[in-house]
Image 1 (cartoon, rainbow, N blue to C red):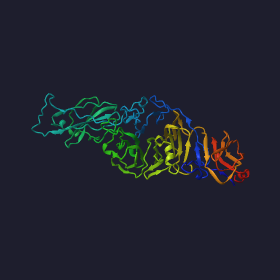
Image 2 (cartoon, one colour):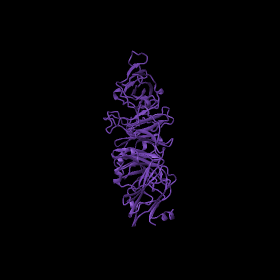
Image 3 (tube, rainbow, N blue to C red):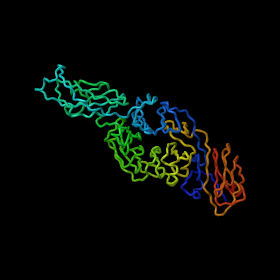
Image 4 (cartoon, rainbow, N blue to C red):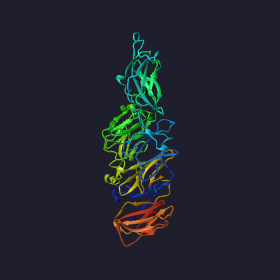
Amino acid sequence: MTGFKINTFGGKAPKVFARLLPNDMAQVADNVRLDSGRLDPWKGNAATSISPVASYNVTQQTKTLFRYNSSIWVGSDEELDIVRSPIAEDPWERIYVTGIGSASGGGGDYPRMTLATIVGSGTYYYLGLPAPDSLPSAPVLTNKDSAAATATLLADSEVPQSRSYVVTYITAYGEEGPPSAPLISNIVEVYSDQITTVTFPANVSGNYNIVKKRLYRTDSSGTYRRVTEVLFAQSTYADTVDEVNLGEAVPTATFAAPPDNVSIDHKDGPMRGLVSMPNGILAGFSGQTVCFSEAFQPHAWPVGFQLTVKSDIVALAPMTNGLLVLTKEKPAMIQGLSPSNMAMSEIDSTLSCVSKRSVVDMGEYVIYASPDGLVMGGEQGLKLATGDLLTRDQWQEIVPTSLVGFFWEGHYIGFYSTGSEDKGFIFDPRGGKNSFSSLDFHATAGYNDLETDELYLVVGGSVVKFAQGSALNFKWRTKKFYTPSPFNPAVAKVDCDSYSPNPVFKLYSGGVLKHTQTVTNSDSFRLPSGYKGQEFEAEITGSVAVNEICVYESAREIGSNA
């Protein structure tokens, strides 16, 4: 028997010399779906009607697409990180965003928050609250019985209480910020027959949606306890509250806003890379610093929770029990169930991350782009997932810094831009001969909707549903079959369930095209004579499923090997 038959079809492994590939693997596998064993066309993308809010128009420059709810979509030309509120049944449907303003500069890049009711107008508030300025002066003392009198009548019979006051801001959503800094010069000695009138510091400016202020003062033990809550615009307050009627201790003493665009405070810039972790914790990064929020309080980012790695952070990837920190050098793993009790360890690996947008949550692990290939990373360590498929040089040809990745049905769907071509690929991390194939289109953004199990992509400036359209035209080329003795193949056969539209068969010998055949049925067809070769490749293109390809020296061999 001289020739070859293929009735199972696999993906490609460019790293392997074409002659040494398994018989059912390919040199070219474009737009093919292989998990059934036969050669199926990948389904194309289906058009869908999506119009993001805030008058945003989806274009080929779109880099972010996010489904807020069933009727609201958010789009942007910037690389945004968007997470939902960790609070169950949040009445405001809040989302938290980093990256707005990162592309344009001009000081507009800071972490933000918005609501379903206002996102349509493009309105965002600062994420987190600043501490108010210290009180501008010491409180004024007056006598309770006579407003005109300032002196106490109890100086000879009572020991005065030392009082210090601090202020916090409150948003319309009940979020409370850190307290103002107390000043020694503002401490007053107060007798029980005196009123202390506090003058509030000037109110902060900025889009915080602050509606109230809370006033705290020290009790006899020195603990700051709540005195009252006043409207944001109120400038003074006359304190007549007895100590027994003071409220809770100030709960936000350690709170802080996340790093923002104030360079004097945050030399590494604003927090980015926002992600949601288990137990109601949000995380982000600035430079080499990982930041954590208080559990279920996304507005509070205590400085004491921060951890520092050795090199600049590229992306964060939540794990079941922690956070994988991907950097420009060695990655790190942070583990813990509470933001105040996180422990970090460096991973002894050189598999750095080169593209933040390549990082994809695959379930128990993540996949991201390194200089050497795709990496599978999890709590058990890191593994170069494409090491058997692509050399480092071959991987670099697709410009991994451009890679944008998405999860779909257990597969990693990646898109890249080399400068000369914009295309994609499908990687199955479960391994095997079907691991890697190519896509002939490119997406700039996408959203994996787990609720509906649909992947939305931005392709050619339009939003589409991935793999829900009609069959794509595919191309699949065999390995290079080599025979020690030269021969002239005489017949070929392509078995399909349907031949409409007609698939096209091509035969190459020594890299030279010898025959092209439009296949109309399952009958064998003759191949040209007049030459002999030792190295042969067959190629099939079309959009119908292919069950078998046969190339032999005689028709009898096809029959005997059917």
